[in-house]
Amino acid sequence: MLEVSGLSVSYGRHLALESAALTVAAGEIVVVLGSNGAGKSTLIKALSGLVAPHPGARVTLDGTALHKLPAHRIVEAGLALVPEGRHLFSTLSVAENLALGAFMPRTRAQAEASLERVFEVFPKLKQRLGQIAGTMSGGEQQMVAIGRAMMTCPKLLLLDEPSLGLSPLLTAELFRALPRIAATGAGVLLVEQNSHHSLAISDRGYLLEKGVITGQGAAADLLKSEEVQKAYLGM
Image (cartoon, rainbow, N blue to C red; front, side, top):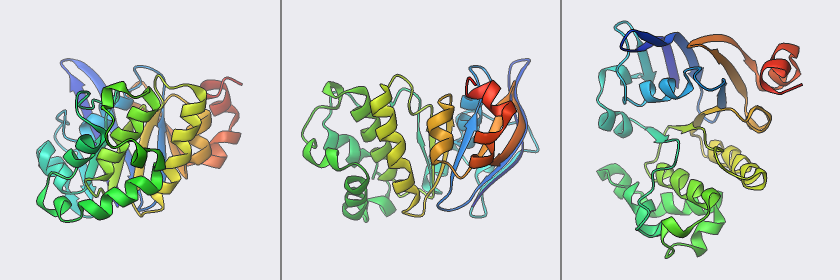
């Protein structure tokens, strides 16, 4: 479904991402692991059209060339981003934040069904629709942010450091929800520093170091890898 090749990004003279290549299939969860400054957020921003890649990059989603589209057209093509820090409208209610995800004509027509899918993944939100988003805990706000992205009816969901700032309990709850999202048929690509939880629920993983993808494999194999354990799992 998602196919990426030759993806490079620079900030001035600094090469932040070099010739990245990866794939994500429908219904698959793929994690990109890397330390701070490895290029994970740059990868997410490049895929979602927030930073411009070098010439020669190719990013396609179900055959649509995303690298040729502006950011708003990328969303229309089926790619939804849950950014680091969530970026909710904190003075609006949960219901209003979710409704803003269904802003496109094709998503407005499916808004009711999309909302039910959000409730299946995050039942807690059904009881919180009237609550002001800014009064919620960090974990609950992350649920709203993911729910808002689900309202766009995405083919691919991108998550940038979704567990950042969450307690271990809320992190575990969040990661339990991701397979339920993948079960709807959407692909899930997340970048994370929380290697244990993300590999435990992922199908495959990529290792990113200093802007270069240095390894990849089945998540179960990466969990067993001595190199990965030392570099990412603290073993």
